[in-house]
Image (cartoon, rainbow, N blue to C red; front, side, top):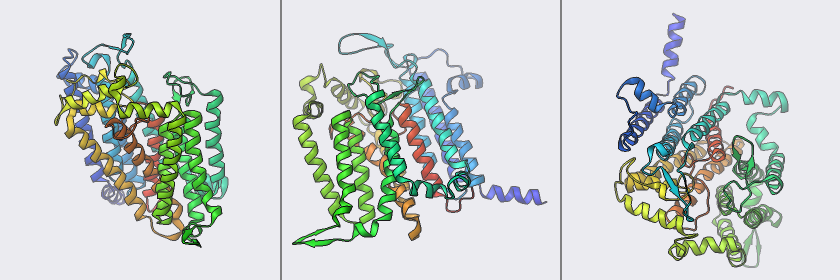
Length: 472
């Protein structure tokens, strides 16, 4: 009788909304994948259970892991947010479907050509690698959620997991900057882009700037939480109201880091992303728009100087202003992307019926263009809505964190959510030619190991903080 009562109690804890949404994502993924196979005329499709399983496996493994994580949350943390996981599963499922669709066996052209006319297999092997990254990301997210990190940290540091992140901010910052400095010595350039910001770990390339995003958010959340009242105060200098000058150092420091990142590593996207996230956190901590305006003015001034004196910045801006001037050279990628979006129209050419392979690096920088060509304006708006909902849930979580003693957690959630928000805004703006292209990835959808893993780490932290009654 006791066992039966416990079973009913556990059943009531089941996160039904989350499970229903995850099942919907699974069905959407399966239908889309099969539609691509049918549209491209693949003869191996068999209308039997084993035939369908052979097509969908192992690409569906990461999505099944999301269901397992949901069941685990029902057991361990039933109060965690129920919309974040399905939204991430939707974006990741779309990534798996689009990368599989770009494989030589499922695209319209078996070989691609570059500007020089050289032919090569189109995106061979990216589907299996992307499945591996998403699976690894889901495992890391589950590790963050279900590992007794509080017990481990209390045993080692006599502090909870969140307190360890808070109190050791200078250690995390030192490790992050050390990783970036190491790229100057050990960094490689696998894409021949002139930017050495990756480590070759053998089975994949790791980009330290992806991890630095989280480290800097942890540092700024801890710093702003400790000095929030001081930063909010001001004194008069004639007609101006200024904060205590020593506390302007973080603002100037982050501006300097952003500019130095551009100068030494020519990583435009990382610089813009880090500075944008910092301004969002500063605004939340102080409630003053003056800091944000001053920061944007400083960044704009520095960017203009770099545009005038740094060739790579000038080239990006000139391509953005007139890509047709170099349509057979540097502007070729953007011109092909514009044509692809135009051919998609409102409802798209249909899954498997477009030719996004003509856009260079469509699986990384321009995956949104591939979605626009085959799903049209309707599909791109659906993706945009999914991102808006995910960002909304993140900021809603920050607002739900109450209490003076949880200020660090609140700022941490704002920073982590802002990473996804600013990164999405930058890459979507670049794809649509609203801003110069910066070469960063679209969260959860673009192909890439470092980006996928770090984004899942962010989601794991958000879900862990969303638990109001953690019992680890």
